[in-house]
Image 1 (tube, rainbow, N blue to C red):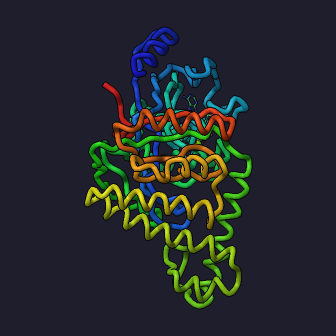
Image 2 (image 1 turned 90 degrees about the vertical axis):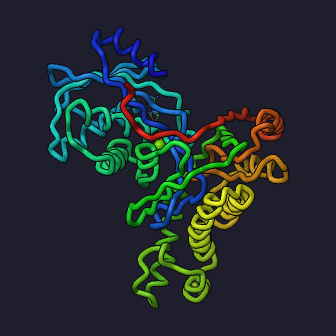
Image 3 (image 1 turned 180 degrees about the vertical axis):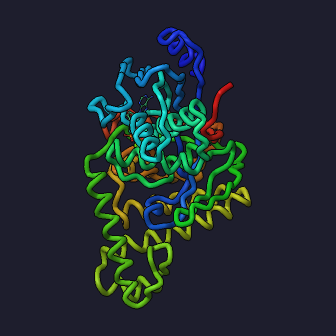
Length: 382
Ligand code: ADP
Ligand code: MG
C-alpha cells in the first residue's frame, strides 16, 4: 500500500513525498458511552489510510484520491465544503489550521487506503488524522497529538457536518500495537491495556447495510440521556452526565417518570460499569469473561438502547452458541455496519464461510469479513 501511494504520487507530481499512515479503529466495548462522558475501549487496526504529500511553491491544494481515481484542486483562500465529499476530510483540516492561525502554503497529496468506507471502522477519521499529521510535519506546525485529534474532530464537525465524538480520531492517532486504549471521555485521560489473547482472532462481520434511521435515532438517544440527567439533577445537582449516575438514582428519579428514558439510561450506566470490568478481564487474559460482556453489551444495545437492526442481531445470534466464539456484538452507533467477534484462530475460516452462507440465504445480502490485528496509530513511514 505504501509503495502504491508513493508510485502514484511520483508519477503525478514528479517529486518525493512524505508518507503518513493513519489506521482505522475498532471498539472492544463501550458503545454510546462517549457522549455520556463515560469510557470507551478502542484500538487502531491494520487497515489504514495512506497520504503522500509535498509542499508546493504556490497557494494551491492539489489532491488525488487513488481509490476513486479522482482529482481535486482549489486555492487555499477559496476552500469550502465540496460536493465531491472525499476532499472535505482533507480541506476541513486546512480550514481548522487557518482558524488557529497556522497558515500554510500550497501542497500536493495523494490519498489511498484499505479501510472499508462507511463500515464503522472510521475511514473518515483516518483520512483526517493522516492529513493533519502530514501537514504538521511538512509545515513544521509544532502541534502535539492531542491538538491534532481535537483539530480533526472539529474538521469533521465543520466540513463533513457530522457531530462525532472524539473516540475515532483519538484511536487512530494514539493507537498502540497489541493494546487497547481505555479512554476517559470526560477528562481525556487514557491508559493502554494490553490485548493479549493468544490463539484468538478479532473478526469483523460487515452486514453491508446502513439504515437511514441512524442519525435521527442517534440524536433522540442523546436527548433521552440528557432528560434522564435532568431528572436526577433535581435531587443530585452534582450529577452532570450519566457518568456520574448510579442505578439507584435511576430507580428513584427516572423510573417513576418514564420507563423508556429509564431503559436508555440504565443501559449507559451498566455499559460504563461493564467496560471497567472488561479491562480487569483483559488484565487477567480472561477471554471468556470478556466475551460474555460483549454479548451482554449487544443485548443491551438491541433491547434496551434499541439501536441494533435485524441484520446485526442475526449475525450475533448466528455465533451466540458457537463454542469457538467467545464474544460478539454490534460495533459502532448502530443500524448497520459490523459486528465484532472474538474467535478461536483455527475456527475462523469455517465460521466466516458458514455464517456468510446463512446470512446470504436468510437476509439476501452478501457478508464481508475482516480479520484484523491491533497496530500502532498515526505515523510517518520511512
Ligand atoms: P466511516 O465509518 O468509514 O468513517 P464515513 O461516512 O464517516 O464512514 O466516512 C467515509 C468517507 O471518508 C468516504 O465517503 C470518503 O469521503 C472518505 N474516505 C474514506 N476512505 C477514503 C479513501 N481511501 N480515499 C478518499 N476518501 C476516503
Ligand atoms: Mg466516519
